[in-house]
Image (tube, rainbow, N blue to C red):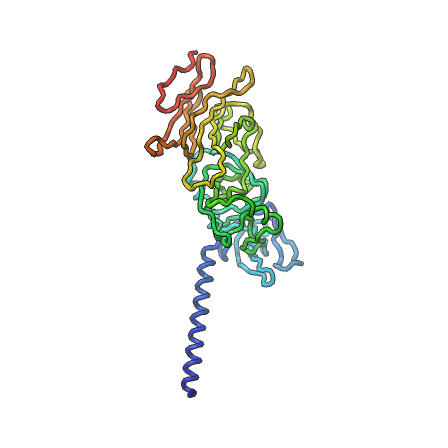
Length: 385
């Protein structure tokens, strides 16, 4: 081989390597652009209950300032610790001294992500809470109902966090290589999810295989999260059925409920610390769903029966005001009106397969018993004064 040929071969090799490196750089920039991590020159809000701004990213660094959930900071720079891969942010606090230092990135939600959550909340500003729930294990709050990657993670919610449920959705379950079953949050600052070990894995393998999974769209109190809305993986959620009605389940699960009494209609279902309040006895509309051992379908109905529970204040006891025949019903549940002129509306599939609004009106008979006029029924006379 001549010197000229050797030179040409080496030149082609170097050129190929440069193109490859440029391609990798472009790919890494593209991935970074989809991330919910904070960026230099932006602002953010603290998501941890308590966190420390430190003098450096070193383990022995001094604590400069303690910040709390919902505190705002300016993001001055970003860094990744080589040994651990943990991501850190250099920030400026909004205290009197404008303290500057380093804080773990997992403790900060970028302003752009917060804005996305606020837009998500606005989509359901006119939707009443359909149910309430709490986490039985720490879990991710996401911008979309998708756990095939970590780009949509807003923050990690604490176990026991409470929230209002405004809707839910079934989506295809990701492959085993794309997500972990529990949807735990990434390791601190790493942006990568870690897989649970040991007995939990063997237990999960014994569960029936579901092709689809349930996600809840939620509204959160400020005590739990600076982000007002997001999506939570359904297996992490326990529905908190009010103590007033929990003992009236008759083989079907309660999936949505709403108080019908005017005197309690404006009360928040959460206390000052986010815990669900004990509810006084009263009348309720409840949406029920039968259990099934069959895999859940993406388009299956949200509920299959309507149950109205009345309350007799004189005798201090509940009674059945109405129980519908089996049907195919869809959320949202909407309760309107006050006093004796109250109605509730859901969506129901008719005999032709069309899903239409169905409005039910409430009335009290001559004995003061709460009753319901269903769609298509001739309205019955209300209680005479």
